[in-house]
Amino acid sequence: MPIIPWRPFWDIERFFEEEWPEWPEFRFPSVPMIRTPRMDIYETNGEVVAEVELPGVEPKNIEVEVKDNVLKVEAKAKEVKEIKEKGYYRKEMGARYFKRAVSLPTEVIGEKAEAEYTDGILKITIPKTKPKKVEEKKIKIKVTK
Image (cartoon, rainbow, N blue to C red; front, side, top):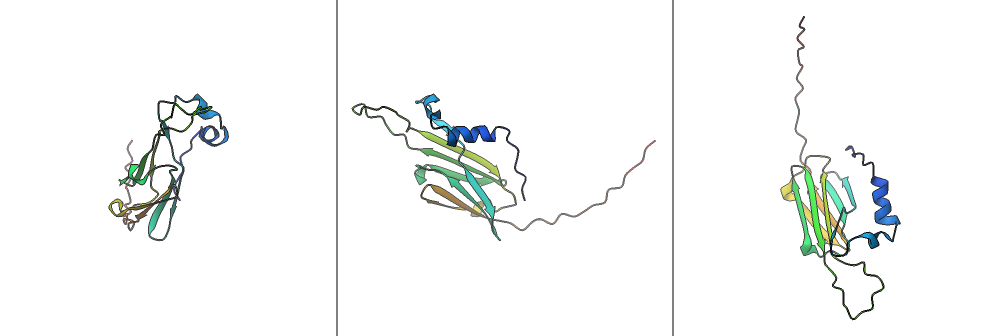
């Protein structure tokens, strides 16, 4: 089982992303917000599978890369133009940019990765490699005086 790094501000980040609906009012409307998409990663018998939440993103605007056992996902959501004729009371929809890089828990074959996008969920399947056999070597300890 991989070790999940401790993120001291995890609960605060979740609070602003999920619990506090007024948070978007404090953003600069012209600057796209970089978001860390939520991701589930699990293993099956021969694969590592990652499922990434990317709501409102066109598949052509998603980039996936697997290199040196690191999975990188970047995506841009379309920008909705404000129509001046409409009498807006609130304007929250706009350009969004998603980015995430995660170290995978086991050795994988990145060149054979496949991705599928359905209903805002990007599913990436990456075949695992056989673990390399590591030889143990006894180390002799020198004693100096």
